[in-house]
Length: 274
Picture 1: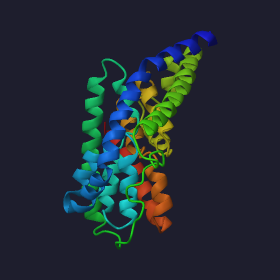
Picture 2: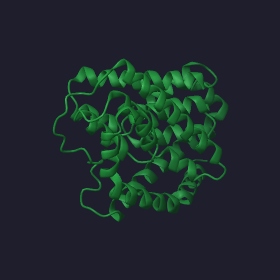
Picture 3: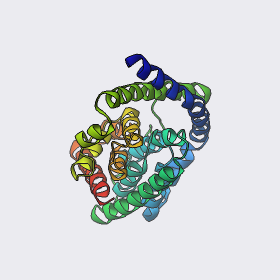
Picture 4: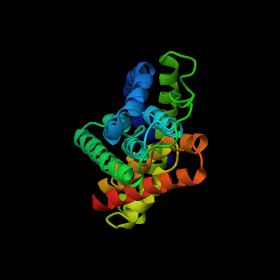
């Protein structure tokens, strides 16, 4: 049975490999040539920051959330704009969904709801926490996760593809093995499906500053173990490495903890409502 599960996981992963590489090449091209432009947009939109942040944040990859974290640390964007970017960021979730036939409705719903949630939460945050931080020099504003430092798009595209493929294979194998032993219904019950508890758990999982969290949440949703609302909760709180960059670049610590609490709270509330 384990060999069957292993071969199924390998085949499922290989099926999406060409698509993932093509998608990452396109995304790296966009990020390579527009990251500075996106940063300038975020820093100059003023009161429309949450709207621009939510729209730019929904582009897969960690670039927007990393740029937003550095811009916030430099006092160039508001709390609401940063929160909007973090909430709308989906990391690799959209790519995984796009690689599965018949997931068009899920992709559209995910994008629309995350943008709406990001805009509403961002506007409310700016009304409550008025003004920006004191502006300062921010040398790392356009720095991504470090894989693109040497220039070009082929190497980072390969890096992201290999990394995501490894995570996808690992989680697909573990999930298929779990399903083979206990079944989808028992797994869903264990994760609190159709209860108010599940969005809390999913949002907590989403806070892990790594693409592994978004991969796991998406795979659980596709397997039917997570409800759509819980998947939204987990993917809204999942700001990728942007959250780690915020804690590294921004001070004081209590300000970062406030943003973390806001992010988690909004994600849970949105998941419960949906």
